[in-house]
Length: 161
Image (tube, rainbow, N blue to C red):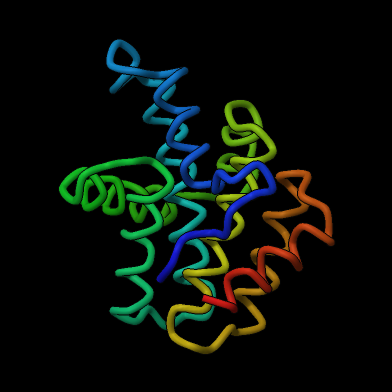
């Protein structure tokens, strides 16, 4: 899977996401509870999309791990641990708000759009976007204050990869 295309200024969203995290959380901020909460919220939304159609393929699971690596700049072992923690958290979740409120509190709009791209990549990883996956991503977009136009643009960007 490729990365999101370049923005008008020549930088892609994933690079800007990683730069923002590095600037704001650098070495001294790594591993804080705030970082962990943010990372778990991102991972939980990816897991929610993975499970939305009640079928989890190896390809989709691999895409979740790739998305975690791309969005959060984690090594493979950290991605595996975060993925397992997110699955447990989703098992006990009662709604999406607990995840989206964390993301709204900590991420910029551009970072939310990068997350939307990754949610679509997970949904499209098995080459079939189920109506439940699309509905879930639409709900997440609403909770993250992502417009319908941006929701569709993310879907189209991910379909082109």
